[in-house]
Length: 433
Image (cartoon, rainbow, N blue to C red; front, top):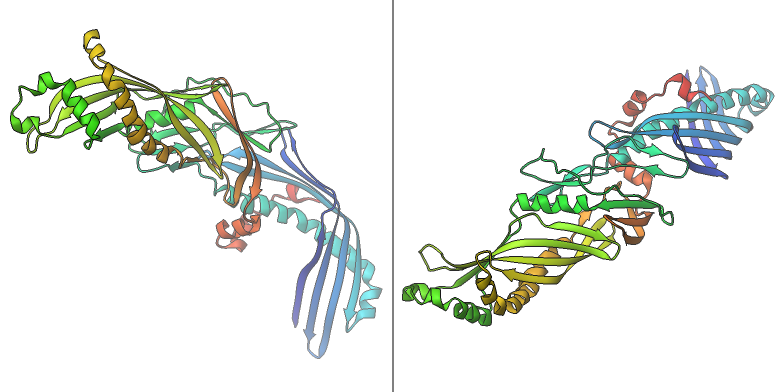
């Protein structure tokens, strides 16, 4: 005996559908009065008995109500932890064709009841598998803890389960950078708690001063805020030699003719201040001026303190939060005496020019590369807007599906779909129709 049946979905119409938030039941999807078209191709061989033909079935009045319960897993990633489902098919129509068409027409009432029962039983297991396996494979593409570059990484793990209200889905991320050499290092959060009230965009992400301060603290601990300039502009070289002529004149001819080196080193982690009027970054660094004779130890001529204030203009491009820095304030002074600070006044303008020409482009080249905001693969931001508040800024945007969800899920889904589907079979209560 040989029985072969091929089933093909020929039509799917989801007329009224609604996706909304429901407290305690998380994300709800409700579909009413949908319709489904199916084509069955049958072949039956039994000894000398043969039956071949087709069954065209249409299911109408399909109602589905499913809820996705969201939570955080041990790694801090958002997961679908449970799927509730109720589904029903109110009526079906069947047309038969083939060898025993009249026999099937006579038994149509029983066949329709059986098909309707089977369809009712299959909708919820399919939805359960889609949520627990396929949708979770999409959420697995969200970066949680990853490296930003060779020095620091970023942690976007959830601090607690998502909170659902009637209008919003709120997720609280750690949002902290860390030095890669100190993977377990944590930075104390003293920033204000962001308050999101805007509702014009689909998604709003708040970044407090803690987010930016943790980045600068991490780079500081990794030794990134250090720069040596050994090829100084000719006019600055002449000015420095004239300024420190009293120290240079007592050196040997070989030391006097040796090149100058200017070293900048942050003495403390820079600090970010966010106000409605803009974002500023304050930097305090030491400036050391030395002679570098070949094959001899360096000769320090002077050490001073530099205070810099930068303005930062934030922008969101694609999935990356980027920053454009601009030098706003510059001051140098001596930590030895007020008299020496007066002698440094002629160096203010040329050193500021050196920063603008030689240092700021290097900083902007890095900050404009930005840092990725956690989103699933295939989804990006559009219609971005950045708004400053007291102590934090918000980024609002709409979501754009650059890739089809099916394409992303097939790429990142489980290798063995049958095993995954079997392991994700819902309990009878969740699949009941």
